[in-house]
Image (cartoon, rainbow, N blue to C red):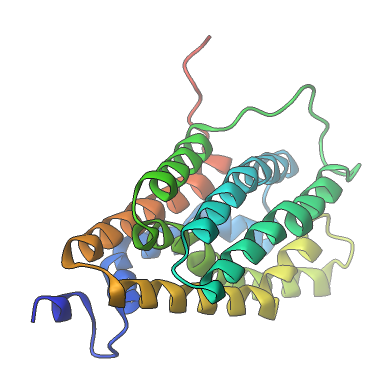
Length: 236
């Protein structure tokens, strides 16, 4: 009976995680940053800041996925996490470089510094993947897949309307790629692996998985919000 307390009527552990973070996800949906990213009114300097931070985040997140691959209980899971790590390093990193090289974005002198949210998020994920069980690490990594896919679907629809009115909009074309089927498929696969991990996990580990998913969802909210409303580091 105890294990069932961590599932829903659908029988999927990830549905429990989704329900548990309903208020946090509602707060993400209401973020001014996401609304303005979707409707094309986000200032270009803020967009550049977001892309820079996302690039720094992906460099760390790819290490998280590689750690999960190494800890995976079977070849199928290992292949998924390793493939996702390679995509983060190669495909998405190249996309970010192309965006930051766009002359329409304001120039920046020097290298960007990780924001408080970016460094906190990456550090938490790496520490969790490295020191906790595979199941807990996978649960911590899941919000980046799942919330990204859900938010991205709405952003893509908004960006399509912006592009219809202004085909040359400096970042709407990029935002429209959030609707790609690959994002949805990756999120679905990640959910399946987390569900499988929960099935094999102890009650204690399932509780830790729920905590890790919640903490990572908090960081998702902070990461997006601080692109528009930065929380500066104390002066050096």
